[in-house]
Amino acid sequence: MKNKLGILFVALLSVIVMTSATKTEATGIEFEHVTLAEAKVMAKESGKLIFIDCYTDWCGPCRRMAATSFKDEKVGELFNDSFINLKIEMEKNPDGKEIARQYRIRAYPTLLMINAEGKLVKQAIGMHSKGDLIQLANNVLKK
Image (cartoon, rainbow, N blue to C red):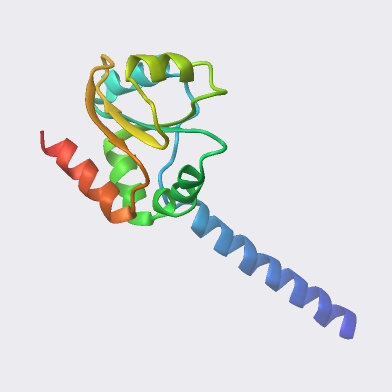
């Protein structure tokens, strides 16, 4: 009897953990795993702008934003509905050096919003809270 209760308890606990993990995975900004060229095609087809998080692995504010602001549900809803979202490690990603040169990136994190042709719409430097990101996106989308 104790074995059956133990197995039932473990099974129930597994279901609870899996359910809560599924809920948290679905929130926040969903970043595409594509090149900038592919994102431009996607933007042209969808009529959306491209949002690029330009970061480096060694950047503390970049990591903090990835763990907090980018995971916010409201931020995710707005950015996922309105942008093609890219996250580019500027020192390791093949597009990184060209993006840094083209958009004159000198600090991290740098957030870029560009159109399907690659024209800069907005550039924001530094760490941003979830409220800052929502305001930034709304200001860009109003234009």
